[in-house]
Length: 340
Image (cartoon, rainbow, N blue to C red; front, side):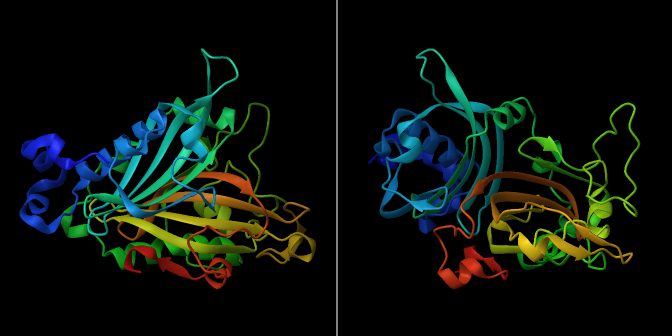
């Protein structure tokens, strides 16, 4: 494996900060983000030795534990333009949304894809690797053409910063409010809250020309044209009947960002029929059992969610993350895994 000695004292100091050089072997924001780039460069080259990986490191891809060097290691061709980091310096965790290119049957082409990545860095080695690879070409092209919202790199004023526990509580209200979705929950959204899913705007979308904006009080399905609050207050998200394995894996207190992995279950059958807040009975949602495997981040300001971004893909119904026991995987409890 590559030794940090090869980078020299100055390079180490720049990457990990004075505390690491002093012997605590911790990693600052720049250091954590650098590990992501070094890791992806190693995957492109299919050379695990290019990055310091602990001998007992665990690696999962799409919820499956694999040998390091397998999976995306075989197919990653290049990093894309989209890059969004969530760095949790105290926990030594860094999460990342990015666009990538995989191999294509034509040698001079690449297939667009997306990655949601988590690395745990301990003693200047990668101890855990967790990644979702979303192989949706249209979604990957959309995301690759985006620029991360500037708010994601903007610091929260120090006097307004929340504790990591309080940030997780607010983020978890999103999952809890969607799962219960009786229109009466605590929905902590700013007036300009907005959500992107696989690069697509799924709140506050413009009303297409020639159409009328759906009325949240009479519609039979929730609409991407509604605000975050309108969607939740409508009660029309109730068909997402279970949000489980809620793993909060990175909390950036300085920037007010929480990054989570979770599964959204649509059980079908009787779960598709429910009563909305005004008393109407509605049937909606997928007919067959359906699970979304999702990575989602929240920008939180003064106790309210302002921006939401998610990468997701369909997975086998009832699947778990590979980082939880069966009971944890089936639970809708919030887990701060950095404290485990």
